[in-house]
Image (tube, rainbow, N blue to C red; front, side):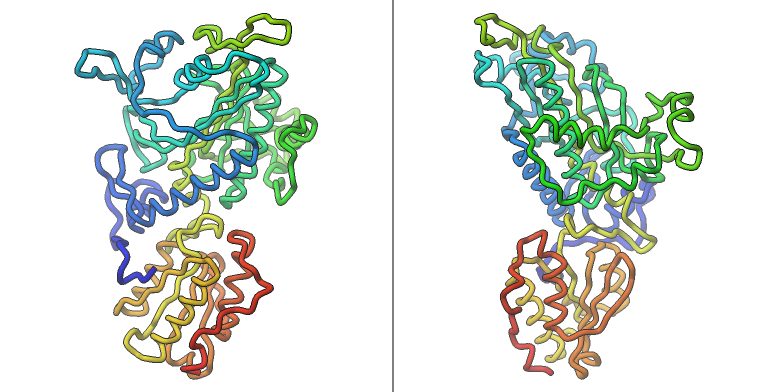
Amino acid sequence: MRLSRYFLPVLKETPSEAKIVSHRYMLRAGLIKQASAGIYSWLPMGFKILRKLENIVHQEQQRAGHIPMLMPTLQTADLWRESGRYDAYGPEMLRMKDRHDRDMLFSPTAEEMFTDVFRSNVTSYKDLPLTLYQIQWKFRDEIRPRFGVMRGREFFMKDGYNFDLTKEDALHAYNRHLVSYLRTYERMGLQAIPMRADSGPIGGDYTHEFLVLAETGESEVFYDSQITDLTFGDREIDYDDVAQCQAVLEEFTSRYARTDETHVEDEFTAQVPEDRRRVARGIEVGQIFYFGTQYSDKMGAMVTDENGVRVPVHMGSHGIGVSRLLGAIIEASHDDKGIIWPEGVTPFHCGIVNLKPGVAEADEACDALYKSITALGLEPLLDDRKDSAGAKFATMDLIGLPWRITVGPRGLKNGVVEVTCRRTGESEEMTPEMAVEKIARIYGPHVGADLTQPMPQRAFHTWM
């Protein structure tokens, strides 16, 4: 994409309503625009990142054997009355009536809807286990929406629901989800720590929430510092292997990690040596629950077991706040110049800055770099605007692309361009061919670039 043809309304000044880093940078970098309190329009670059996060969630859910579908955002109150939650949920639920005076609501979550789909179509234990999920917009009428997408009223969320014959099977589904979430967050460049948590209005006996450590986190967290040394890495997991999933769960949850809601100081001091005790702030980015037959009992979600007896299924739910993740990533990865996107979620794989647009050598070199990187299946953002070098560098730093290639007549006379790492600020001069090869090596694991093939050499010789 050429920046002169893109819609990127960056702001020089920070809007007064933005109180935390992610909100400030999402507004300034042209990712979102407030439509009303707690509701945002997603502008092109913000929407692009949102879709990247959504795709990662889809890929990892389906890798774990979960099946995608889509539910309506508007639900009938009748289902919620069946489960007993219509009156109990509270004022966060946006209630309304349709033209026929029927009670409706804007979905804050979807346990009832998924349970209804299941009970209408599944009758035998032979169809189990089954996990269905969606990624859909939700609405919760927060009394004080704030902090941008971190606590908005409308949000984009993955919610999944497992249906199993026994508690043992359902707890394996619980473990499977925890493992898939660890992989999901790592692909996004996040270290999300699973912590014992309170189940809230969803209910259930088993629940972990995943928190990203950040100074602006809403929750106080208490944890063993050894947890931050754990990584999922590139290990291969057989999600059908009960023992393997259980081993990963124990590895990541055996050390103390609790939110302030479930923290027990005596346990903390007894279990964790003093030099490893940490107290910090955390941002919730997901949660998993096992709640047994709570909904299936009330709503008649039953199957015939192998003895011909009708039994309620055991259920769990599993959520990831996809839109909230943008804010969490920024809170965890930024500096005083702007955002620093991890390579796995960056909106563009690198920026190309033309210091002298209109100068033939610079234009030709930038076009050649742009075409060569695009030919690898990558997306560069070429800043071909007639702005000052300082303004271009400031924009690149603000929007946070991980890598920048700077092209100018002075360097081209020596046959080099400058490649800069956004995270470290370190720059290196190299030939354009080497710059393309470097970008290809960095993103090979992300896009499957074939590094056995020679790099494209389009027009590099014309200005050297």
